[in-house]
Length: 257
Image (cartoon, rainbow, N blue to C red; front, side, top):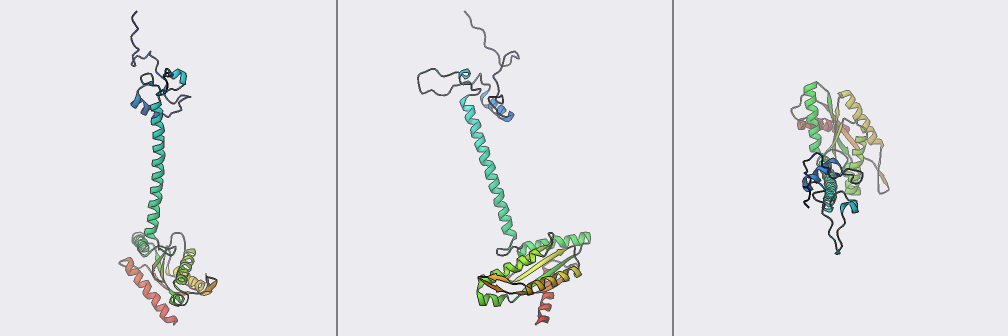
């Protein structure tokens, strides 16, 4: 007796094997497409799992599986790889953010380093030229810093620098910038502010430094500061603006001696 010809996969009346994504499979459409490209339909690749006994391999109907073991293994492998790649991307993003922070911030104090501060100044200068905005630079040189270093050691000097930096950061607006320019010198960039506002800010900071103390190994130490104020007035570069504010500070320090 002759057997009927095999059903054609292209015959629209021929029932196809269930795709993953049914109630039993639970696979997404992208998984279904991937499996289809690698394995075809289940009916064509219903290869049973290797058997360790001589018994006949169970059929798909008996096991309740819709896809062969190799297909399921592929899906599991892809899921694990996707999870690993997401973790790697997150770690790389965090490393990049940390590197960017280190590149822009002072190694000791919670302020910008000189390079990053000068970059903020250059941006402010550009806005001043383009939009007619006002900006003022305050330059601070700490008073008594050398005495603290010589008397109590460099660790006490570091504590003094951190104290001053935190005080400056706590007294500026979100859009302003605070930078450590080197040694015991700091600068504040006030955007959208005029000379009157900046001078008032400098006087307030000077008073807080004069009245305040910082703790170091159970001791309460004092430091102070001299402030120079210089508004943006078409300076040719950020460095030139800093030099002018530094010179203004020097005159204030000289007059107070």
